Amino acid sequence: MVDNVLELNLGLGTGYAGQSTRQRCPAPFLLKTYDLLEEGEAEDSTQIVSWNAEGTGFVVWSPAEFSDLTLPRYFKHNNFSSFIRQLNTYGFKKISSKRWEFKHEKFQRGCRHLLVGITRKKCEPSVFPAYLKSSSEENAMTSTEENNHQLLMEENKNLKKERLELQMQIDECKELEMKLLACLSQFMGNHQNKVRRLC
Image 1 (tube, one colour):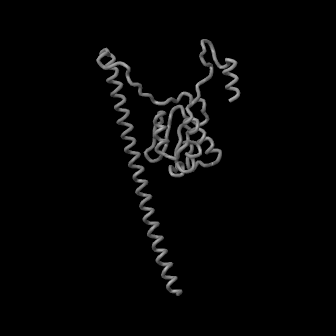
Image 2 (tube, helix red, strand yellow):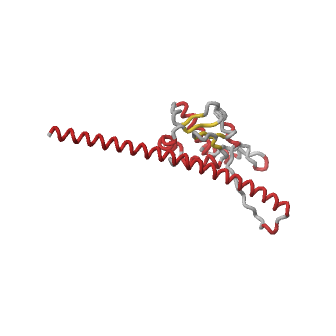
Image 3 (cartoon, one colour):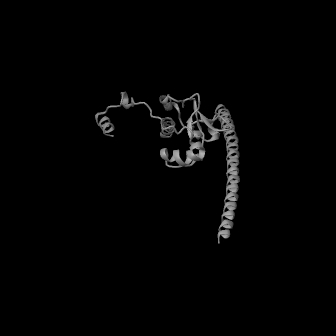
């Protein structure tokens, strides 16, 4: 903080014509995600989240524990869906249908310096009304709109797949809950019978 104030007051950190000579910083979300993976390896909490074998992506092995234990340590929430949405806005791809594995070409183990190259996806609206555009601009917009439409359709398909996977997990949890309740009920019934026999 003090260094920043000194740099501003002394005019350090600026090049010609007031341009900054400092390098861009990665987004806080990316830094925190990278840190949770690196620190997770150091703390040996790799059964919750870890780098994949190649170090080119990461796997959330236990979404429930990740939400409850890991997310609140690094972010202001514990919502796994919000975390995934953030990953999507930075261009991460889910690369496995059987597990929560995510990948980005510039997000790699031991390559923290690459994080600067990861930017949010942007959708910039046009300033000019459609009737003022030339036909070449309209054609370019049409192809851009088609690409955006394809991306949205692909993302929608992926979200539907994720929703089905989550629904399956919910169904499994409900089934487990019913089994546990049945066991508890049976135990309580047996316990009451033993108490009655003692009286």
